[in-house]
Length: 360
Length: 161
Image (tube, rainbow over all chains, first blue to last red):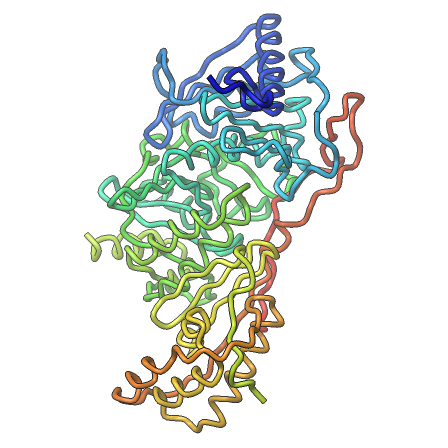
């Protein structure tokens, strides 16, 4: 038998990054032992995901946005995410084994992103995310749950979902989605283009349109393109809240309106209008025109890709060529349109329903 | 004046692109810039990617379009300059003659209306690639989040190259 020439060749060798992941995981387990744990299960993108919280700092802040996908407990979830904060669990993390120079643009840690392991520390929010893709265990840590920013409550675990779903042929995309269970549209475009306002308006219409996403959703592409809802939250500019009076009951009052965005949790107030997903019939680019009437006009596949791909790729850690390829295939596969948004806002859901009827 | 034997290659793997019939979408993953290349730009980009030298591209375009050869050459020259300035392509002196087949095929076709290539550049994603500074760290060495309330990144205006 050939002798091992170095420790790396040993079948018992554990790489440094996995050793550190295990240390953090143990910190979580110790914290859970001390203050107790809570498990919540969610059915997201066709998979069962267990969120295991140590302490009570994070659950109430991270689960409202995914409450519409709440599932029954199971013994063997596809992914387990361990979540804790140091403040409420009175636990400390071991020191990071990397240096300041190792932080990348999305907080990816150089040397700690391998085929097995993904690591990012978001310098804006202070959230550490790690994922072991072989063991299907992820870690989510923040020093103090009270400092969790509004965008983490509105779209919790975005980085971990993006990484893990990518291993399951699910692409997290920057798009809103509304339609019917039989089929709907993706609304794509940069911030301020009208994605959120158009999708949220479906909640207040008798058009029969259902809401699946206002900002992020999952795309699967095994044959027919399909969008999966992840979040039943909505965000609009705080200055625009008066235009959406029907959303007032759903306003998350834990963040004050001095923030740039107001956050809404929709499940308890619009449950019958939230849909877990549907086949994608079209990609639609909303555009504010200043004209009175809303109308739909054809758009090129290239225009749709320009509206969808860059904002998806550059917002998500590690998204690149594979995401671009998947989105390119999508805009080639389904028709693309511009939705010219009129000032007579009540027309908007009807225009989308009319479009879906023509595509049925 | 274009060098007839110069061909071009896409500068780096981080430049990803998708070619549609009439338009190419190009994304530079390093810089956050992305581009729409329209008009005759799609055909020119195909020729660039196939390694056709400049003289071959000019010949292919003049055989395909109803336009003065000098006008086509000037448009091509401007576009190649823009693409190089943006770091999307790199020049190579390479007198390959692999373009002959494309030209003969184009000679047999009905000439189309010339639409000068147009490269539009979008920079609104660059803000997403800015590295957050590390303000301070705790006693264990973990960075502290920004002291101010984080806000959503909003997109900025686009511009043509």
